[in-house]
Each structure stands twice: as C-alpha cells, then as structure tokens.
Image 1 (cartoon, rainbow, N blue to C red):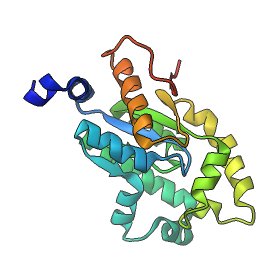
Image 2: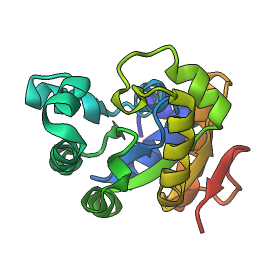
Image 3: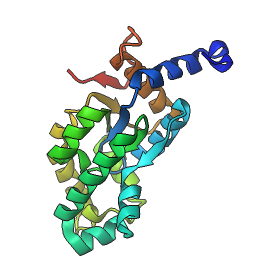
Length: 206
C-alpha cells in the first residue's frame, strides 16, 4: 500500500476497488443527459483509471460525428458499429466507460458489458433530462417536432432494459462529486468490499 493510501482512508478504499475490479470496466449507462460523461470523468479521476467516452471513440473510428453517422447510415448501422467499438473497448479495462443512450439496448452490447464490466444506470427524472438536453444540439434522436414527447417515449422504451444494470444510481441536480461518492459506495458493496448499505441514491439491482 502506498504512503498516500496509509494516510488517506478514501485513497485506500479507492485502491482496493481498483484491485478488485481487475480487468473489468465500470460501464455507465442511461439516457442522454443523465451525466454519464461528466460523472464518469470525475469517477475515473478518483480511481486513477482511464475515462473513455464510447461515442467519442465511434466518431474517431468513423471520422464522422454521431449526427453525421445517423444521417448517412441510419440508426441500425450506427448501433452495429457501436456494439463493435464497445466490445473492443471493454478489452482494455479497468476503466470508466460512458456509453451512448441506446447502447445498452443492443443485446450484444449488454452481453459483453455483463461479461467484462459492472454496469451502473444513472437514472434521472424526465424534467432533469429535458432541461439538460435542451442545451445541446447534437442529439439526433431528439431532432423531431416534439423533442419532449420523443424523450418520454425513449424513456418508456429503455427504462425496463436499463433496469437490468448491476446498480442503479439516482442522477439529479446535485454536485457531481456526490454522485461519484454514491457510485463508489455502491461499487465497494457490489465488489464485496463493504458491508454497509450504499449511500442514499444508490440501489443494488436484485
């Protein structure tokens, strides 16, 4: 154990989490606007492991933006490419991997996430998501006449599948570090490193 860990209980706990992960990745799933990238970056910093954004890697591989891929090839081809990229990325753990909103809906992606990672659903309420996604113009699935109705439909379609994640975390308008703390508490419990209940906002999936 490092001197830092000896003098900092949090650092010791975080080192134990990374050791217990071995080659597995922490995979963040959830709707667009749930905070996967912003929370994921902070989580990776706390654990001193890489942060990877799957959408950024897809754009890098295709040399196109996500909206351009949707427009040129359609959603079906995008999902196939997404599954291939995520499968490749999950060979490189441990890491924090933020996935696109529809990624976990693909059966192949769900299977590889179960095999190579621990999945966390960042579950946010409709009003929180709508407020966040309105700030962005790069959401191809929301380029409709009624984005709010589209968002509600996507949530209804996806939530039952998201609920298959290993752990559910309540994403809401609190400091990102609070959500990171809840993930770490729930992760330690999931890995058998802590006996206490997860922090408020974390729920172990039965």
